Image (cartoon, rainbow, N blue to C red; front, side):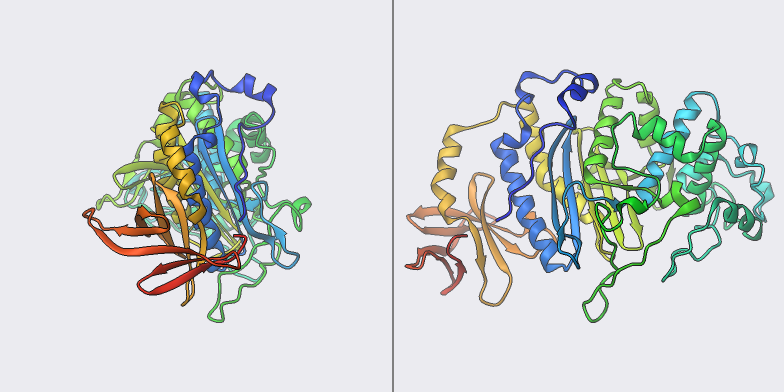
Length: 492
């Protein structure tokens, strides 16, 4: 069984002392060492390992952050399938539209410096902004409209750059040349229309207002100060074939994926160009938690709160957006972050600021629901992190009970295919059916009766059928249920 890679802090100790606020005494021990957190990470690891394998995902990386601690990060599958190069937490992927968050941060930094205002017309900063406008009575497109996708602009920049095989993303000059041939889709402030063109223009405004190239500004004012040394504003040839994972298409009807040819995002970089790692996005998340505590000079905490707050909502209330940030609800909790989808890659960054918990997911296979992976990781681990962050870790009685049941844990091969993972969860031995899209709803709780005999606990706490674990002479173990058995091979 593969074991999770555990990180105590980001970067070197000296950097931590400079950047991180003092933590309470009980938090000095890594949260991953807390029994409840370790149990949750084990469940997450088992589920993610099966999801990657059964889902035919080429490779994936996942990280979990609590406040200033990268609690856990791991890679699954391959960064390069052909050479069987494993994916790791340090593997780079295109993060696609997560790029928009950095553009929005840059714009709000400049707003706070008085170099632009959210209600500034785009044409005030970009003299070449001359799109065809059939709705002049509705007023001009402004910067807030760009950041909230309520500008009325079309989705793309008038070039078929999402079309293979060469994916011809335009240069700055090509965007300027094409814009006069495009038309407004709606009057400003009428509908939500997700727009890569809008965030591309926001990036152009960052460059114009700062007097620097977009790349230079973002690197000097966001990436370098945060220690995000593995994040770049476009796909970089230096990393192709090594740290940058090879991108693959979605699976076709034949179940096969194909390599995506090399491409560059060029002028669309502020909307969809960045490459990064789950470790670096963890740094980005931790920075936001620091900002919200008033502990960082790069951005005022009220500005970040403003960015995280809903600024646009469709009439049905199902589509909500902040300033650059997507804002959504799951199980009555509010989250902020963004997803990304580019040729060969999917990604998602999710933050729950109230809990100071974030998850980041990246994959080099199209057709993967990246938000589901980030959300499921949060749902599994966040409750344990909340508890561990507020209480000293360790309950000897619970640990002793768990130790007595560990011999039954492991992965059992089901006779009709698939697997049953037996693990400790919520103080009891539980059986997780794999693969599954919802691991928390796929657990079967067992109550220990005697020796290797257990019974299923029904939803009303009544006891159901028996689960009987049987040691075999060859070192394997059988798990009997309903007169049939699954097998855990010897040595597992």
